[in-house]
Length: 163
Image 1 (cartoon, rainbow, N blue to C red):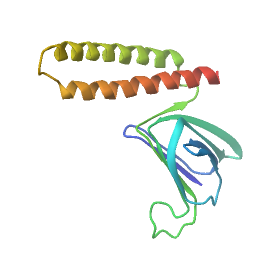
Image 2 (image 1 turned 90 degrees about the vertical axis):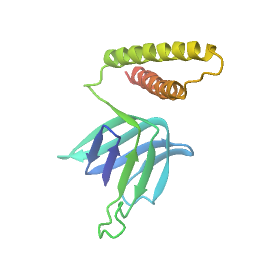
Image 3 (image 1 turned 135 degrees about the horizontal axis):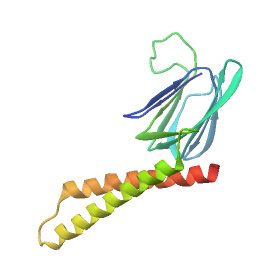
């Protein structure tokens, strides 16, 4: 099987994938070779894969933000002659849980983003005190920062639970 995880800044392709496990809105899906076509939204932010590399099973776990999950036995190219099962995950952001991921670095990023968010909220409160003045750009920036802060917070919770 082929596994592809894609975000605007990150891409991971794994060949020889033997199993993929994702948590969708309607339950947990475990995908093996020749699985039926499937599509869903990743609900709890975790995607786990197993690959067979040089006769060794390797496990990878990713935390994803706003992810869509697609399983296809024809791949994305419907004219392709291969019958390999493809698993595609498209996300806003992804973090691979592994030895290189540091809880301290993620905590520091959380603190920095949270501080920026708090400053933006304070600015919005000050601007909104003036009658008739609403800064829509500032409000959208706040929403994006809130999403980032929430993703990092969830990632920290997942990492602490796994260790």
